[in-house]
Length: 236
Image (cartoon, rainbow, N blue to C red; front, side):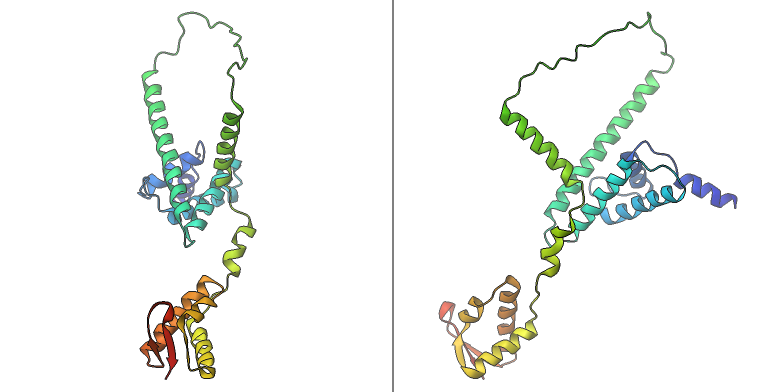
């Protein structure tokens, strides 16, 4: 019973913010901060947040926002084009390194300041001048707004509609394309290869047609004569 209580106390350690928690998880599980294994980090982070909620601890919105950000990076990592995921991982690594360095410097300054908790004279009340005097060009303001808004939006999970095209995209099988080509060749035994490629409506359809021709040629079901746009296929 004592061992269980100690484990819970350790896992539910209070952190200053999500960056502090991420650094703890990276250090604890010996992860590479320069090349973060996002799948493992997401699992560890979300598990800790769930434990905080189950223990009736108040979970700040910044912890939930970071959870959404990590899930989004994991999601785009699963897509065929993962360049955005790599950029987001580099951005997160940079922020973690910057936070880590600031934390180290703050600790060093705190150690140096020990014993200097007094003033040479009483503090004076100073009223700061809050007037903003810098002048900005309209283009500069628009650029600053776009950069700030864009960075914020990248940390949020995409809407469900963003995945509609990926989920509903039709996948054409090679076997179905072979059947289609054979049916066509039974009517006209010799036809241009280019016609089958040209009639393809999608990239998947075009690739399936090309692979179907290669498969049929390998199995000696068709003969390919000529080259380029004049290449013809004949049913054997």
